[in-house]
Image 1 (spheres, rainbow, N blue to C red):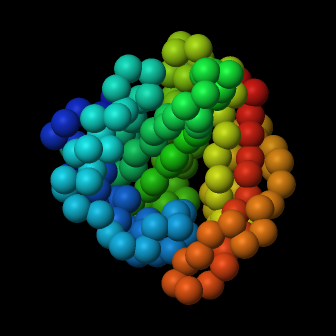
Image 2 (image 1 turned 90 degrees about the vertical axis):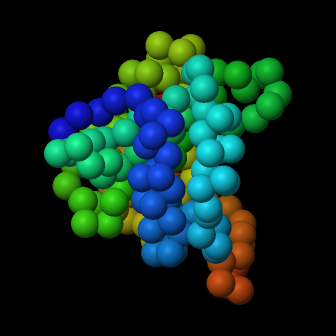
Length: 161
């Protein structure tokens, strides 16, 4: 398996995997799948220190991770929000761990001192990865969002890099 920086020609695969996360209702409050134009625009905002990484196996993208801006306020310039999405059939096989490790390395190189993430309390697979990697639960926002017409709690986690 290769972990590398994403390229423009990876956008379709990133979109496919992101839409799986939306459809499966395990990783995001988004309800509507996204199109290529949306993902191209998103990708353009991830230049420089806001990296997107790809996990590739046998020339196929099987997962991706990104460092996202946490806040536009300069006081939070060293805090990054992260995302990790894995192709359905590859979940639970250690790909997220490899992406997370590399994302943290890239984050340190780009002057991030802390990563935060937001996950659903019922996403035990994701929480297990983060806890094993040194992330701690900060707390749970009750009724933080709405998904399929129901309130959803969101757990915040963090790690000092």
